[in-house]
Amino acid sequence: MVHMYYDEGVTTSDKDILKREIIRRIIYKQSNNNLTFKNAVILENLETLDLKLSMPKAVMLRPEKIKEGSRAGLKTLEWFDVNETMETYQLELEITDDAKARELDGMQTKYSMQAVAEGFTYEKDLDICTTLTAARAAADAASGKWNDSTTEIGIDIATTIGEMLEHAPIKEKDIPNICLFYPVKLWGFLSSPIQIGQVQQSIRSWVKQEFNINWYPTNLKTTSVLAVLRHPQCATHMTYTGKALTLVEPKRNAGVSDSYIVTQKFKTFIVPEEDGGTTNNMIREITGVL
Image (tube, rainbow, N blue to C red; front, side, top):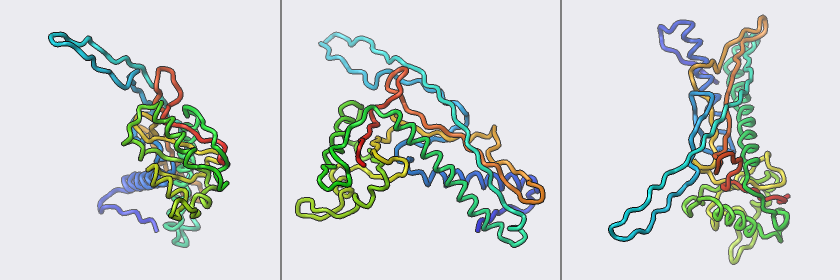
């Protein structure tokens, strides 16, 4: 059961504010913890609704080779602005009067909060997945269906990672932060043991061992695999946590129930590689796997 603890001497008004804050924290935390695509982005809390950044047009300034007694010329970074605004999502959490009369309001609150958190998780995952897919640098066609035992899945993955390494400022140390989000229908096939050399192991285990990357099944991909490097220069998912807005607001439904209107404001944004750009070479897709 969900219990709310208060200090003695706290007024009714203060108790209500405290309860709302507890509900907000639990739902916000659960919705983020349950995210599949949190492994693809940097999660950030922001106390304003708008994000404004200045990004450099180059990621590297090369030094000059100079002769004794000479000095290198001045090199400066050029900058461009990035502006993003969060979107608003809302749900209503209800505790019925009948549940209170049966002393089941704690249980109802617990499961209602779980359902609300799951709803926000789905929308946040969908926002991240949709944003990343739209920002992919390119797509690489699979050599065959991945549920066909003759398909060289390792070659497909090696091709995509090779393209990422060639076109994005990625170091070898970054490779363990590459994630593959694949259709959940492939989970059983990728988990089945196959003969690789003298050892029997699953394709997923072999790829993780050989390439040092992570796999995540998802219902949001059905025929393709999304390859993403989790990196500050790739994508960030922002959630508003400021105090200026009421994010959990109580409401009385006369004769029926008490409820809380729960609001989340969030947005996934891609770090563009150039002024006006909409794609990032740390994101690619392998198409036609199913």
